[in-house]
Length: 174
Image 1 (cartoon, rainbow, N blue to C red):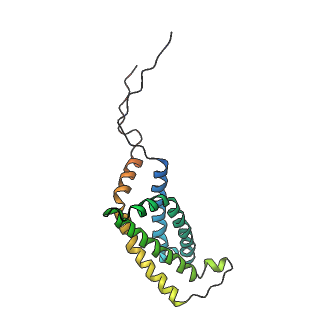
Image 2: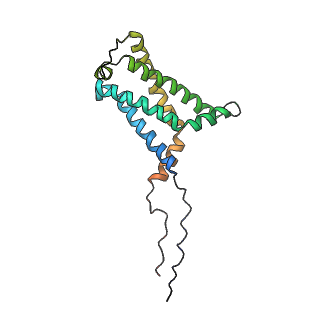
Image 3: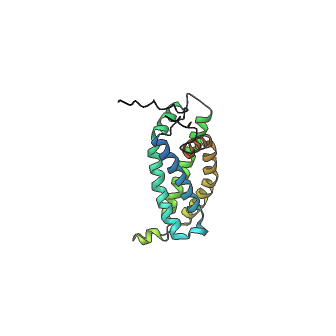
């Protein structure tokens, strides 16, 4: 006797989150947590602040690499369209410049991390001022960046954190 199984009931249409989008979501979240920690010098202490700052510098380089396709696409469209893409592009470019200067100046004024690597630096007041100024600018730009991307963050977050069984109808008994 041959048994045929009934076709599975159709699931309601749910948009799956591609692996690359999941990577971006969690990587960006990790960067935000790391940024919050590195900015909290009183909480972390100087050694953790410096090592985490170096790590964030490398992580931001990877972040830029992961999003390079967006950078090139948006750069090409920059003068063809206005609006939201242009504003996000300007904020991201400002954030790139400011965070690069912050990490670079942090390296140049390092008192712990570079010393532990056997590298001696003599911090100049100019680089200390650059570091202080750029760190304050990131404190303004990071929340603006997050706010401008909030719809994407909320949409992906909802889709990823939804209960796996939510929206499925129970199968009828055979």
